[in-house]
Image 1 (cartoon, rainbow, N blue to C red):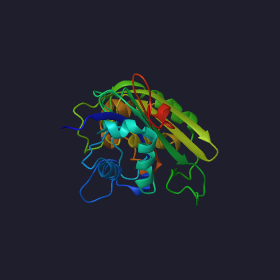
Image 2: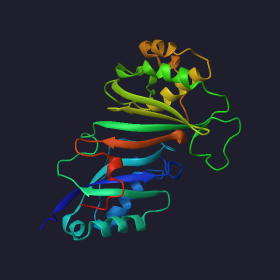
Image 3: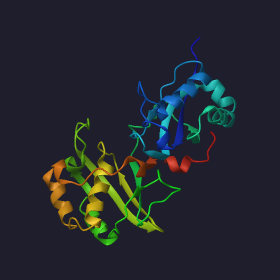
Amino acid sequence: METELQRIAMVAEFDGSQFHGWQRQENAISAQAVLEDVLAGIEQQPVKLTAAGRTDAGVHAEALLIHADVDAARWLRSPRAYTQGVNRLLPDGICVSGVRSVAENFHARFDCLERRYRYQIWNRTTPSAIHRWRHWWMPRRLDLDAMREASGYLLGRHDFTAFRASGCQASSPLRELRHIGIEQHGWEIHIDIHANAFLYHMVRNIVGTLVAVGTHRWSPVQMQEILNSRDRTLAGATAPAHGLYFTDALYDAFSAQEMVGEEGQ
C-alpha cells in the first residue's frame, strides 16, 4: 500500500556563512542537503525539497519558501510536533521558522510571484567586530540620494544583461524590477530589491554599481547607460555574498514572511 503524501510549505532561515549556498552539491555542505537529510531520516525515505530561489555560498536567508511531500498521517497527527522534531535535528545555523499544509499542486518556485532581497552595507570608517559576516564594510561615505536617483532607472521590465553573471543559465535576461528602497539605520545601509525573478548575481551586481554611484565614481544617469548597454563589463563590481539576504517570497494567498511563527495548519 502506497503512503499517502501531504505537500507542505516550509520557511527556511539560515546563516549563509555556515553553508555553501542553498542547492545540494557533491563536495560541499548546503542548506538544502542538510534539511533534506533530516527530513529523510524522519520520513525513512528520500525527500526532495524545492525552493522559491537559490542562494550562493555566503548568502543568508531570513524567509526562503520551500515545499516538500511528507507522510500525511505522520504530519496530520501533530504538525507542531513534526516541525519541532525537524528543528531539534537540524544543526546550528539553520531552522524551519514556519510551516503549513498546501495543495498537492503548489510549487514553491513556479507559483512564486515575487522574490525579495535585502543587501546590508556597514558604512563607517571602521569595521564592526561583532557583525563582520552580516554586511559589506564600506569605509567611504555613500551618497544615498545619488544612489536612489540611479536606482530609479532600473525600475520596470528591462533586459538586465549588464547585471547578469557569465554563468547565468536563465533563458531570458528580461526581468521586472518592482521596488528598490535604500535606507540608513545607524551605521548600516539597507538596499531592498523586489522583482518577479532575478538573474544570477543580479542583486549583487546592481548593489556594486549603486555603490560606485554612491562614491561618486559614476553619476546617477550613467545607470541608464549601463542598463541600455547590455554589457556586464560596464557595470560595477559584484558585491560580496555575505551582505545579501533572501527576505521573502510572495504567492497568491500568502508570503513566506507571513508564515513565520506558524507550526502547521
